[in-house]
View 1 (spheres, rainbow, N blue to C red):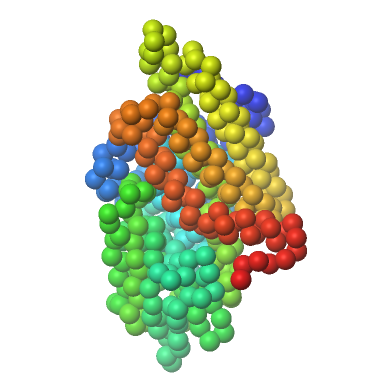
View 2 (view 1 turned 90 degrees about the horizontal axis):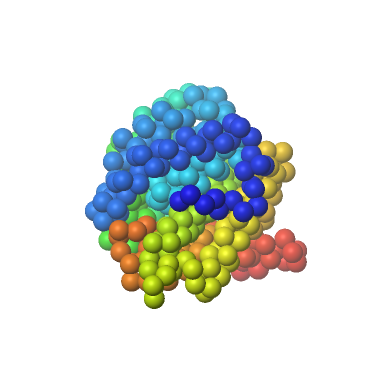
Length: 387
């Protein structure tokens, strides 16, 4: 792809450090991920531990956190890394964001000094993989209904319950698990080798196949008192983590959209239809124009929200605006690009259908579109319509 898709010069809004981080993530995606992704997607397996160590060596795990071996970079740099990784595959970005913005962030934000020292340096290096257990089989959009429980037994905690659709679960060394205790929802740092903990992998997925997705089962999992996250009480803890992950998605979805658009542009330039390139037809150019406008708007929105986050003033409804818009537009771009490739668009030779399938999951996780519409609706009307 030789033509720049940055029609409105968003790059001029980025610092040299942010551009360097983006270039590092893009090289990793181009050299390490893209050549293998068709096979990983087809076989629904990935070398998760190897990839985690390689990402850690580049400083891309928990990169927006400070201390404990984390890079301490800004939100926009983190977002751009997510964009480049998701331009390769949404499942790859899920590995990065679940590690850094859910599991690591929960320990960094709410954990004890002992918990931070024990886990964060190893997780930043990719030597330990984390997962985040909030969603349950019957409680996705309504985490307040969770049934997983934690009860006191002397000085210990005993956890029982199950979690569903957990990225990294089967390969994780540590799980951040949210459970209902007597004083409300609490978070726990659970080493996955703890007796009673198991994480069977979910198979037969049609989306995010280049990603590990699991169920978490907790059967009388006994933990010391020190396993509880001391600074998290109630749903504000896990919801704060979800906002961190959603922020990465705002950028990441635009990466998937960009890859689809670049693929379609290259294809249309080479494809001959009635003795001239497909890209020379007005209808094709109209599609490209509309898609590029939405792509540039989405990236501009992401950078703007990143600057608000830098200032510490980013609000949850603003995150919802970004997640709702950018994932929705990314899916629309993927589907439109598929029409340009016609029958070839469904072939694994091209990444478009893989991106489209993946984005169906991205649309749902970290808050469905309907949930984000209700968050925005509440901000506009002052009325909560969740029930």
